[in-house]
Length: 178
Ligand code: HQG
Image 1 (tube, rainbow, N blue to C red):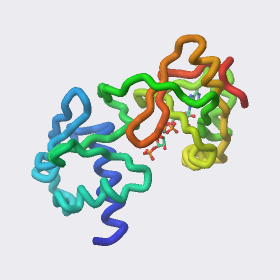
Image 2 (image 1 turned 135 degrees about the vertical axis):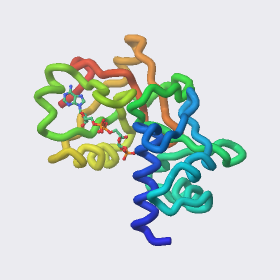
Image 3 (image 1 turned 30 degrees about the vertical axis):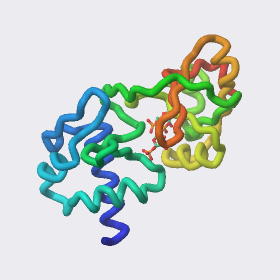
Image 4 (image 1 turned 90 degrees about the vertical axis):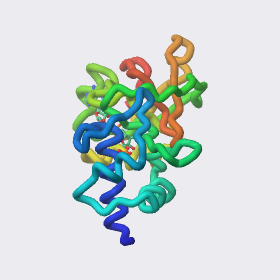
């Protein structure tokens, strides 16, 4: 199966598992899991088999998807816009984390801090290069440094997704170095 088709499946899975399961009349449970057989049965416009889905999960560059123990269910590990309880335990982050954004958003972030917009969390990374890659999806990248140590001292909780993205509800301006 060619690379293009794999990427197409990955994008389609992101769409239905993070944002719009109704598109194929799919039901996610409260924790975001969908039956793989239901996805296959309800998808008409793409060639989809269980083998292909497992291949996408395994080879995905950012490990965006997770399987349950018996490989009957799949979910997105982060990035949802729909309300999903990922069931993650709060975790102690490193003393700083990075957020990748675009130059054109910086003035607004200086006013409002980081907000989650359409998603369920603000996404942070422990790695500067990841932040640059995330930021450049929206224009000239800009990396912000987040004082997570100060946030923790103020009682703010952090969560780590299965694919190592740090998640938080919001980041006030006072914790951000521009
Ligand atoms: C910005 C990708 C103006 C924020 C990545 C970002 C990530 C503000 C954009 C995941 C703002 C939202 C999420 C404010 C935040 N004013 N702009 N007050 N606060 N922003 O895509 O973090 O490839 O929803 O800086 O790897 O960019 O899809 O969030 O630029 O983990 O798997 O508003 O998506 O993963 O954009 O990316 P997004 P994000 P995938």
